[in-house]
Image 1 (cartoon, one colour):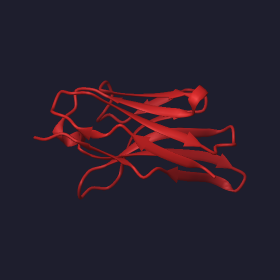
Image 2: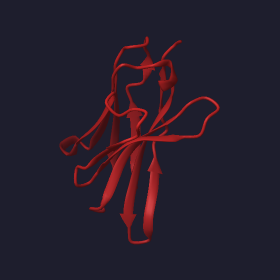
Image 3: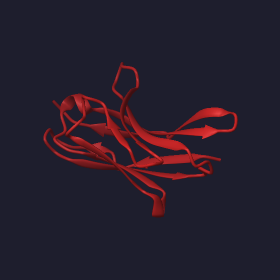
Length: 119
């Protein structure tokens, strides 16, 4: 059973940094990607960054150059470093695993962690 648990959110002022962590478990297939999404109040969930099982990274234009995704396979953890935070970065940040299973690609989600940057 795939499990994703986010941590590290909080309240910080504009220009500050935060580091989010996602502890994952239960991934038994070799082809997968791990990513971060964000949902701002009243908006749809948006994709932020992805890292594949091969280590390739991709970022949304809105966070490129400010956010960095990383993974530590030794401890099954995914990270998102958030720098130069802006009020529009406020939202619930979700960890995602997209796994190529025998039954087809499957999406798994954590419960999210709240990040708040006041205007």
